[in-house]
Length: 402
Image (cartoon, rainbow, N blue to C red; front, side, top):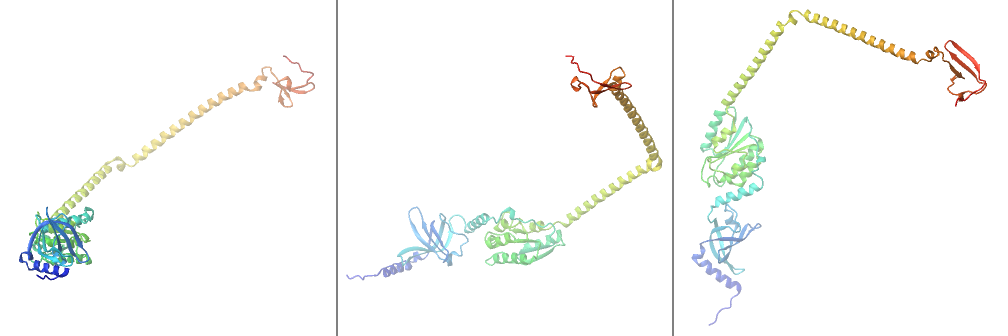
């Protein structure tokens, strides 16, 4: 039996034809855990391994298929794959060509929601310090929603009832479907480019997660976060949260609630204004009454009835002060005289003339008092001062008493 000799390519091609011709392998569902995941950024293809506790198989998901995924596959994620089994001829390796992928257990949309929410939260897109305050009295309210839904009518009615002076500027968009997210983001950018409004309401009525998904798209979240005009997100009912809600400056549970949060209640403002006016009038009237009472008191006082009373009181006070000043001056002079007399007495007692009057004399030698025999010598001419004159004499000699 003569068997043909095949090249490697021929063998791989033959094996591939067997795989491709097997109907059971052309459409298979496989569950397993992702490992060795690689996102080939140049081509956009996903390469990974699917494994269970005992076996593994290589898998590839081309860009044409994975661009429809709502979530990003990750290592360790349990998934259910739909695809076909074939052979990659160049390497002689059979692998799973994946057409669709779903998370095993958690829905694809729920997983995509959590992945995007976590990623944008790490970027700080939901940070509280980024939130802008809603203007207290907006004169232009921008509304971005469907033209056919009940939301726009609810918003219009509430704005007209609460704050009719505000102008509503409506931008109709699709709120579900493939083109909804780009339309919503585009409307937000147009409002900001021309400052068409003071506050924006972005939303729609309630629905399933699939119907609300446009408000979970990254393009909408970034448009809301980048908006210089404050944004109120009003998507779904009270229990529904979207990525748009987290990125917005304020979240309202319903479009009707968003309209109430966007503008003040004119009736309440009018009542508040009247209350303030009444309070101001009461303060003014009370102030006038107090001043009128004070004026009446002054009119009834003695000063206005007889101004001379204050002049007479002043005169008496001046006379009293003059008398006190005169007494103080006299007392001071008496004290000064007494002190001077005492000083004179003391000075007189210490005067050398007083000593001379008692029989004492002062010997002077050349104008200086002779205090010791050392101050004179024989033949010095001395001047002797006595109480009634001067005696001139010559020294014959000096005797030492010691």
